[in-house]
Amino acid sequence: MMIPMLPSEKYFGNFELVYPFYGAMPTGVTVSETGRIFVCFPRWGDDVKFTVAEIVEDKLLPYPNLQTNLVNPENITRTFISVQSVVADGRGTLWVLDTAAPNFSEPIKGGAKLVAVDLETNTIRKVYTFTEDVVLPTTYLNDVRFDFRVGKAGYAYITDSSSTGPGAIIVVDLADGNAFRRLNGANSTSPDPYFIPKVEGKVLMNRNKDGSTSPFRLASDGIAISPDGRVLFFCPLTSRHLFSITTEALRDRSIPDMELPYYVEYWGEKGASDGMITDAKGNVYAGDYEHNCIRKILPNGTMETIIHDPRMLWPDTLSIGPDQYLYVIVNQLHRQPRFHYGKDLRQKPYSLLRIKIDEFPAPTF
Image (tube, rainbow, N blue to C red; front, top):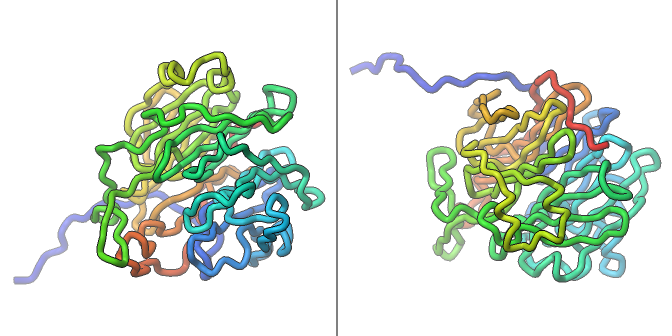
């Protein structure tokens, strides 16, 4: 019997290909206020020649130079080890978040850092390192957001997306570098114990070469900040839930850690997300890696899907450019060998895509 043309799932939304990656797998992207595009490649096992790059005339150039991207054990605070995130702050600085944890190892002592690179001179302006009570042996620094309207020099908020220890939001006073953990091990920063991720129709879990398996669990990952800097949105990677908290409560250390979870607001399910970003009107954009799509969450909590496409294979980091496009790294993270008994199922190229949203990025100052 001939099978007639049967109804199929509807896909919608349009994207443009900005850059195809035929080498190492990227995770982060950011677009500066002048339109410069930066990406990063954590050292997860691919041949990473440089962990931070700028896309210049269809070429990947190590940024700020190749020497900074070569690990120097004698100068680990001024060289990049394994960068997970890059964020342009809209006022002339590229911030580089170095996990110092290649292959998700314990962070190299003294290597985990937040680095400010001057985009005018393309040189490192300042390096923020962390004490051992902030970056734990289990810590994996994941993503960062900024607000320069508070304190003497502004604040940074970093997610710890640990797979084996407590998740947290790390708060950094950029004036003196003082950093501290908040919502450490709280439900809102922890993997959802009842969540079973399903990507491309299959359960996603750690599947090791020796045949052993374990659940895939990652703590707080996606992070976005409201246009006025007063509210921080965040989510664990292995969860479909969206949470928020006021940045004032995060900074206020007179609120005991035991009481801080009461300040967290729950926004409901938004899908399982990796990256998130906010536009100037306060809309939050979040990927959904289970359904190959990106969602827009309005300030009133209503939600709409702006793109649903079978090629959106694990939307990772999001960034909004001055051209009013939403940029997204698509990297097939779920096809890595560690999820398939050591077999690499990724197909090159990985991609940097962009979607016209007609909105500007949220300001930081």
